[in-house]
Image (tube, rainbow, N blue to C red):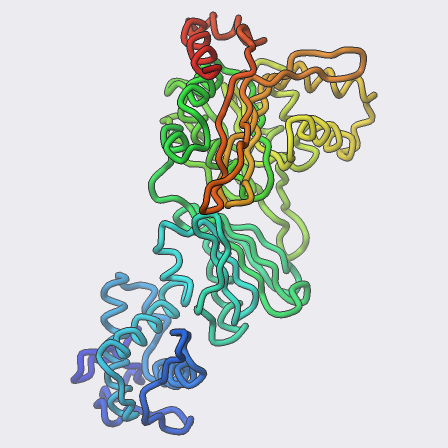
Amino acid sequence: MFGKRSEGGAALKTPASAPAPKPEDAKPVQAAPVNTAPNRQANNEPSEEYYETKATIFNALFETIDVSALAGMQPDKAREEIRTIVDEIIAIRNVRLSVAEQNQLITEICDDILGYGPLEPLLERDDIADIMVNGAKHVFIETNGKMQKTNIRFRDNTQLMNICQRIVSQVGRRVDEASPICDARLLDGSRVNVIAPPLAIDGPALTIRKFKKDKLQLSDLVDFKSISPAGARVLEIIGACQCNIVISGGTGSGKTTLLNCLTGFIHPDERIITCEDAAELQLQQPHVVRLETRPPNLEGKGKITMSDLVKNCLRMRPERIIVGEVRGPEAFDLLQAMNTGHDGSMGTLHANSPREALSRLESMITMGGFSLPAKTIREMIVGSVDVIVQAARLRDGSRRITRVTEVIGMEGEVIVTQDLIVYEMDGEDADGKIIGEHKSTGIARPAFWDRARYFNLEKELAEALDEAGG
């Protein structure tokens, strides 16, 4: 724990029998004194001198304060302790800083010790969708659908690796040379991927898919023009009448967001079990069981795969099964679940069209070692999947639901589908934004019409399709 309080109010590291040192007695670091305020470059990116100043004060702090004791303190109290002693170190080292520069330096040091270092200001911004760290000196973000480089950097790859370790350890995982790839999540649900040296040649690569503080509703997607109001109503009916849904799309196309929106129409009385690699779904129903995969331990044992989770949840009396992302042999288990009474189950997968999504399901089952004839697998898909919702990220960075497609049967050995709603692009405006609209294909009675009628939703479905047709 901390030693006695100094005159300045900070808690200093000190032997149990020794009196607390006065601020002027605090031991300075061995680095050369820093007597000038750190300069800022013209593009507002901190200079090397700034990072040297920060490192000097940071090292002095570690020699002066018992940082390990901070873990047992309230965050505000711990920050105040750090602020007090950093003020003393700055005075001792005769570092001349403006009030604004000193406050910034103290904030960054507090973030380094108590939070996620340079990532903290990015994590606080709700307009950022992704944070991508390519080694210590290159940090990119995606905002409004566009990628841009930031002026944020880490002291070195060691600091970046320490923060990666801090993130993954919070969910019981590890990342090191023996286990250089790790999926994890932040405490707020943001999805994290880390790949460390020796696989990442230029330093650890950290990717964070930000968690939205305000859960998006389907109405928000209408406001963003991702789907038309009538199309949103069709999706609402599809979710409410327990159709089995596969959400297909490329990386960053909004699959998980769309899955979250569609789960909003599940009845509160239903028992839902989610299976994910890193738990990030935000279901609002009261009866939800969340399951998460687990990597192997140091001895290479104890691994729990997505397929293991899907198989086990069948023994847990689920009414709906939600798989965060289908990417392997679990596709077979999910289709089995969909085909054996667990109507309304959902999952996402990477594919660029509904037809490609069907092919990927077939491929994943085949690669999983199931020696079944192709026709049998396709019949299983037809009997399990009712609707495919295709999401896409367009070239202007916007996200659109480009197709709502039914799986209706087989003709010979070919799966037959029909589009209910398609997004048609008409061009782009003067700002380069895509112009288009969602249109109904004119299908008046979809294949799930009887299901909608069972839930007394057939009239609403007919009206929504008629409105979508313009």
